[in-house]
Amino acid sequence: MSDGIAVTVDDLGKRYRRWPHGSVWALRHCSFELPAGVVAALVGMNGAGKTTLMSVVTGLLAPTEGAVRLGDDASRVSFVAQDKPLYRHFSVTDMLKVGASLNRVWDQRRALRWLERFQIPLDRPCGRLSGGQQAQVAFAIALGSCPSLLLLDEPLSNLDPLARREVTKELLGEVADTGLTVLLSTHVVAELGGVADHLLLLAAGTLLEQGDVDDLLASHVRYVGPRSDTSPGPGQILQARHTDRQSTFLVRLASDSAPRVDPPWTTQTVTLEDLVLVRLEMARSGVRGVAA
Amino acid sequence: MMTAVRKGARMVDLAWLTWRQHRWTIVVTAFAVAGYSAYLLVLRGDFVQVACRNAGSCLNIGPAPQILVSFLLPLVSPVLAGIVGLFWGAPLLAREYEQRTHMLSWTQDVSSTRWLLTRLALLGSVVTVLSAGYGIAGTALVRQIVAADHGRGFGGQYGPFTTTGFELWPPMQVVYALFGLALGVAISAVTRRTVMAMGVTLAAFIAARVLIAVWARPIYLPPMRSTFPIGERQPAFTGVDILELRQGYLDKAGNPMSDAAANDCFTSHPQSPTISACERAHGIDRLFVDYQPADRLPLFHLIELGIFLALSAGLLLLAWRLVRRAVSV
Image (cartoon, rainbow over all chains, first blue to last red; front, top):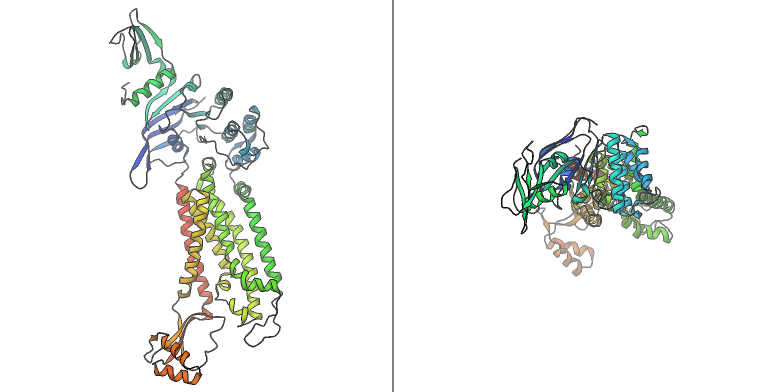
């Protein structure tokens, strides 16, 4: 909706002290920008630092180094924590009142609309709702506070497959309607197809990959052809796989270079899931940076 | 899209949330305190001077006031502040951390520190009213007991410097209760576990109160010493209005002596004139009494108020610093 920047993260680092001695960097040298109005996926394995990054951006944790700057269009931040905490003895109606009480701006109709869509009973205590229903209440509160930046930590983890699709669809609707910027974390890469238009890939507290998903996919290609030890086309090899008769190379292309290969080689497009998995495998086997 | 937008995060909104979360604790405590205070005031009417028997009590009271003055009053008097610490203070932050709801409450427009400070102010006001009312009722009762039974029987148990008499003074009750709240909140910020916070709060509260009452209070100021010749009856100042610390014997140079010699004389010479001669033969010259005089009572109250206010302020600062670590951007 806007061309502005929703949030700028500059050389962010978070160190946890481990009593009685020592400390652990959960996040280090993390820099990125999120354009306003995107749905950004923060992807990483468990323990990669996703929750730490979100907590720092939200303001729940003070960073050890670096800074978070919110854009002019994104002064309102809403955060839904991974376990979707609610006051167990409060009815859903009272939970909405909590949201109204703790925010300078509150849109009750927007919150109620979300709950109606998912048929959440308003008079029931939150502790007696199912995990999926509790997640819906948490989303409703987050949306009711009219955020311009919405941070969702593992938003779909408590939901059944049908609800996942519904929630994703409704969230994208909110983005389209209001120009909301969403940063959602997940370790389930398969959930991302058609949802995220921006990727932040995190491993062991460091950003491996970031940027517009379309650009990232356009700059990667897979060559498939007869068994060969060398790549048939341009680009830096990220992954090479060989069977007895066939070789595939996943390469990163330099900007604007068209992947040209001679028959019998063919090119295949790369999916976001392919790219994420390859980069995570590389990180695990110790290959750190990849020159663009 | 924004038609239904309303403004929140005002004081009245935070007051609603505080009430909604703490209403049962507040209601139960308020009923218990009001009921007990009313009971004290009703029983106060029973403490009327009838006829003083020699050395005995001047009161003729029924079984309920009897239980009250000999057992209930000293036992129950310090409880309110402990309850505030245990059930109001200790869960205040620990339950939020435990159920992770701090991640909800402190990521809205209201900062974590404002959330904490308004909550403390609101609950602190309620605690102040409750403990002041309780202190007023309790003080009215013990003053009546002392007036009706002055210097004798029950009156001696509840003089202004006795533990119960000293501590029921309304401002003292208020400060103890606020200290309990601050202690519970600080411990809950450190432990982040409700049950553990309640246990530690109870232990720390009892320890702080007992240590200060037993060891610190008698020596807020250096005690005064009165001496008088042996063989004389003790003077009248050893009444209910002073805080007597110590009695003993002095030699001619004015140095305190052990009680052993006097005890020997007491057992070997049952007749009072000969006791004195025996004591003199053992080098005992005078008797002494160390005490805090009655006119120091207001000063002692102020000193103890200051100690507990300072402790409370330190504890609240600790809680505030721990909660502030969650800085809002």
